[in-house]
Length: 193
Image (cartoon, rainbow, N blue to C red):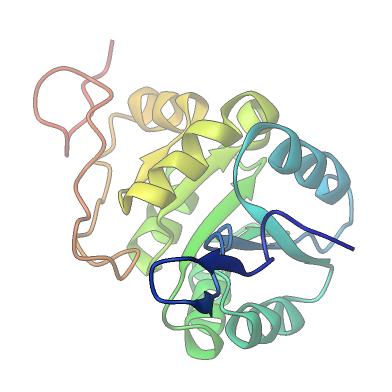
């Protein structure tokens, strides 16, 4: 079958075949231990972004190994563990198995300490489940550009508790990382409204 994407193109100037392929879309692995929102995220990613879902699984180690094996650029994971120490341990395990890609946390947790711990441990993008489908596109654009991102509900949680958003320069392992400027003033401090 003839395909426009992968078929060789005749180069008349040098009388040889040249293989012109479209570069692959960035890969994404979804890890949802409770298997509650993986299908909705996958459908939204395929419909609204240029990212390609490589795998959707309920096992954290399998997600990290699959991402490393297939060269995925990011892992979206849902942490079912509800303490700051537990989420930092989860991120540490992911980083040990998958050190080169970005991590995006999808959570329903409403604690600032939990979010701060996840970001400090190496999560590049933090999206609350209330914002998941509406804000997924912005989150993936941030990953594509190599910058950190917190969804509006996550920023609201930090604002409510008057917490500092612990942005790190090496969170996604990308050299172009910069803080997200969602509020006026200092981007590293969220002012209570």
